[in-house]
Length: 294
Image (cartoon, rainbow, N blue to C red; front, side):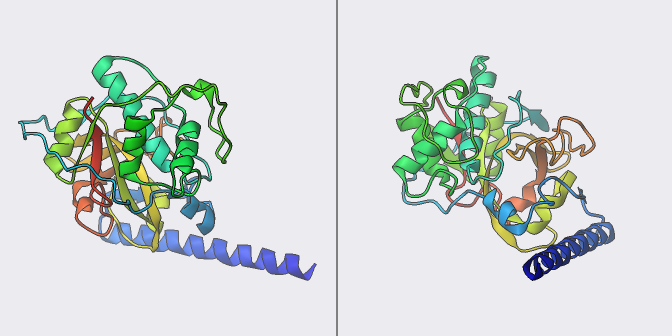
């Protein structure tokens, strides 16, 4: 009985602390006329351990191909690729598999007009087999692209996502592969790739305030580091000076592709270009941003 009382007291203290953080965050955003909105979300309601478990991007190991940059062309001021549905990685550090798979699916949809649904479960279990880590323990940006290139991934129907580590049937054929990929840390090269129908696989540092993101253009405001996260960029908007990014935290978090947090088709976020060059390191950490050539 005593332990139960202590546990309930601890939960109360943590919830009060979370409420205080949100109030302070909202006050800071109002005072600074911030570019985004903070509110309770499906992620902010998780405890710190659960939030950290969503951040499954690890510092890359030496496995990077030479950085290649395409020529800079005159681009439209805004561009948004066609996209596949938002998914939910749940409490598993498999964001790397969702980000890479989303980029493959988006690439096929926009360049070839073909609709695919890759198996993130197979992807993360293959990553665990290759090592180090993988599965729900997180993995790397560059090795994720090499998994698509060297091994391939089967369809979701062959091995549906479980949100925990479980092997796929041996009959699953990893039919979907790529031939080559490129990486960059250059803003215009990322935009050029997007304008060519190629979604961009990127990582960034996640701070506590990001869990409260509920629309607008995110810029780091306050809070401690939760970890690193992998996502897929699907568009950009020069008027708002931001990227449009597909997340893998379900539709109870974020906004639509226009930054509206009140929309029903949530699961995206907008993030400022200036977040490439601060502690968020959006699209510049761990080898930069990655896109499929063919």
